[in-house]
Length: 264
Image 1: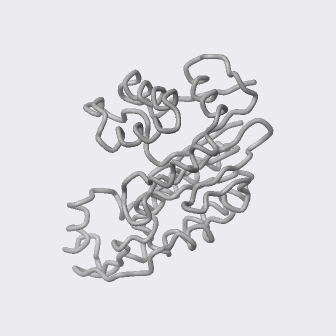
Image 2: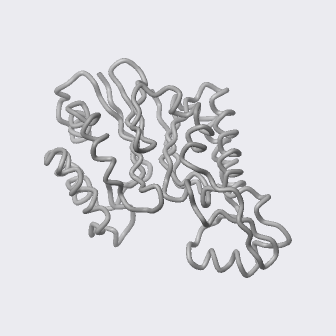
């Protein structure tokens, strides 16, 4: 099984920039607060689509921040892209990020001005991406958009929604879902990354919005929100919290091209 991961797409449909708005005051003010290549996101993702079509992974995981700020049109366009991948035999599984749902920053820019556009609710997110995880789920969390999918016999995907409905913090309600579904096979999976023999026949692949490894030079010191995650995981299993801490402190800067192979 080959798995591709594409995160933080931050897609912004070109229709949301009008009358040279990319150079306008409102859009530039936004970029000054949150720098991204938003005006090029459509071109960038079309390139990604072409690469995926050539690579033809069995599965594509998309762990959040799919859109600029949860604009409904952006989600609808992205679902259309994922439909094209599904038609090529690539199974796509998504999870919302903190930008993707109920976001008041969902805007259209015209010249120097900005105007609100339709944002996306949790229910709408689930509906738009029904074919990309939710319809195939064997378990759902009623308090969040978390779900579990049986990818194949002996392998499950646990898609964990760690967002508060209205903010960027880790969600307390995720703890109950985690405690129900992470169980022993998740610990076996993480131990396998360190070369230990799996103790159980079922592996769980976690799809989690927030990273568990340092990402760049100077990122070696664990931030406060990462420690919050570990504190929450410790309430489920000190073993799991210890593994996450070790992943961060032992790896230093993560290699974006790392391949992890799990074989029976």
